[in-house]
Image (cartoon, rainbow, N blue to C red; front, side, top):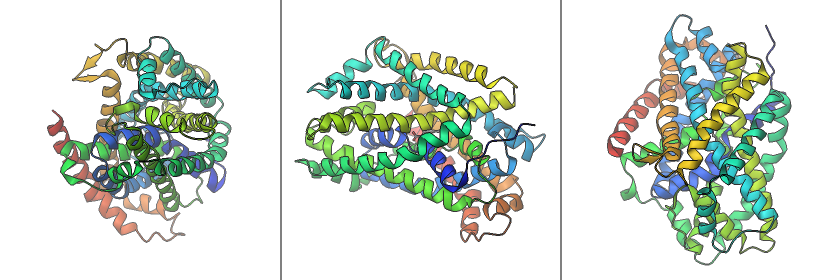
Length: 444
Ligand code: PHE
């Protein structure tokens, strides 16, 4: 038996799990999906999903992981031997591949934008420049490869050194920079329209499909439904308080997404960029705003460096799910496992990148390959994983086990225990099923 690494102390686990949660999902994905789905009403549904589904599922994943002390796949085998629940772990591995394929493409964009800011080569027309870049042939691929190389390099170094040290110092910096960007954004001429778009719910824009997307965004943003938080839970020490950690992680995650929204939408309104411009929204709007700031390129360089690091701490967690499976279950050496997984992800990732540009025919189900990977992971695989985890913790796993984890063997008081059980048993499964069915019916 090898001993499992564990995070050192309280700040370690919160920083690492928050590092997983906070990433491109908050700063790139949230504004673009919110913009395409009506703004304020979407935000509201997203917040409701975070509280009613996200928090209970995060607590469930932490409990499973810490109790079982193993990766997601084995955790179910340990807690419920001879039953098919381990398939949740298998689904999580599929989800990790799917997410990494487009996540690494967008991670690559952040590196391109670091280079551009540092070399002062942003054009006056950020939209055209963005389109030109992502539709290129080798450049997006080269940057995607660079992003993957960085991610896998960190994973190869092991849990503690890699994940912990990178996220601790840099996330607070990202927060400060985002606040500065928000201030600049809301003081631009015409910014009010953008703020209204984000904060004033227009419920007529809410459809079954947009509710599904808001739920998917909540799962994606909190890294739930695919075993990532189970794996991280296994690294949390016995004496840590799971409930307050989960609260802080979710709080920080939502806060960063909100800040990203406040940085993007007012600036978009001021610059005449439509909020529903799609995956390029943040990469077009923010560079447009940097050009209007004194010392804009310095801010721009810093911002994209921090965004890239936030993306790295998330992709590390995705990769860790797969690598820990290969190492602990298939007994593949860590180095080989990492290289193997990296290669497979890059192959899928190439399809994602190219489907945005030179191979526009790479369409399936009426979506580009990129959109298909993005849509199916967040809106199908993760909520489905969440549904099974909720049913498992609510109905299958002995209540005593979960209660012991959540209260550290009774030494802590968890006042929300009853609410937690009510949510995880009834509300979460039913809500996911209803949203799923109504959303998917609408979108076909
Ligand atoms: N939560 C991450 C982000 O917002 C993405 C992610 C999803 C990471 C699922 C791990 C698992 O960028």
